[in-house]
Image 1 (cartoon, rainbow, N blue to C red):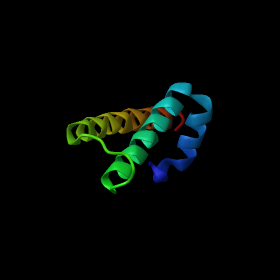
Image 2: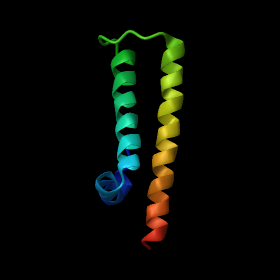
Image 3: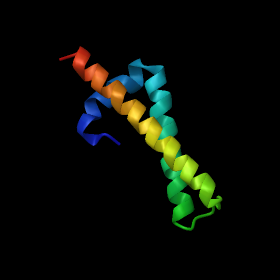
Image 4: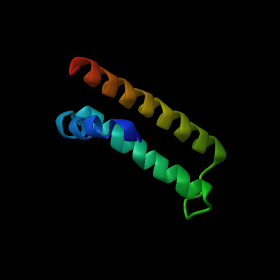
Length: 75
């Protein structure tokens, strides 16, 4: 996620505990959704999968906003 902002992500993950929590939660959801949709061991109700996707998108938006704030503050 956010490969074009890799340097900023690295800084934020080490300096901002909230960013790290959001970033890690997003990645956990991504992995869980992938395992479920790929027919893996996780079997989850389709409604629950949609809720997880919405939460994942919300977390991505939040992380992106923090990246943009950091970029603006350090330009």
